[in-house]
Image (cartoon, one colour):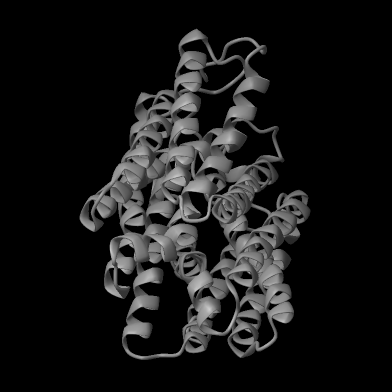
Length: 407
């Protein structure tokens, strides 16, 4: 592996501002990623969308995310993380406003695709920046703490959905105006000089070499597989959970509480497990989540009492989002410094294939007259694939991850 060159650094005054902006971006990502599921019942009624159109509505942003993640990670490794991150955040803010202005189903789906492009460009760079600027030996917990912002955003959009009622367009406006402001602030910070922050890559090697050379092929394939399978499960649950629970006899308020519990469980689990991810025993976290997710999915498919369903949603959110947090934390450390954007972007892109497939899988099952309970039970085999891959990745890299990024 080529030797690392000097990193681009400034003083220390802007570093706390930059850190808080990154946390805000993570919250905004969580808000915008889950807004479609929250507004879906109202959008369907307002625009007369059927199950097929709803599936496209759910998948459009994640399809854009696939391309955005590939392009954004690659560009930031060559042009600098902060300009690409600032532009991506600004772009998904503008696109979110366009969601609120859409007057037809096709316009809304196109605006969701554009939102995904911006989100995709932001996510891998946000993760790579956080990992590259963390203290040595604390890279993975730093990314996991950052990821805690995503379920916070999910809780905020669920509460906003309950508060605004049928005024679903306001959620898109709120999820757009704030990112525009944050993108401008981040751009200004970058122009002034990001104190103490590694803002540019310190080495450049080809994408294929970064992903597959020097014993990185197997970890790369494992992280791709687990990302893809995990996001099939996560995005089907995020997008379809309110509708599925309504079909299982939950009231609208009970379905909202279940979604809040899902995100709340994810936040707490990510927060509690973050300090453990830098340990050689991090594989135990992956194993615990691997065992819990399929069991909880099957239990959710059998639930008849709303209180039990809400409790299971809390645990399920903790298990699924812990797996996702684990993967985000591991991905940047597999690759050489300066190629974290490319490596993480490729992993996120593979995950987005899963996030596209998840809602469409739910659509296919429901269109084939499957019961809502069968949709949750049908995720169990996919959850098993995600878990096996995550545990294999952790065991493969045990004791090596802190050294790989500095070779």
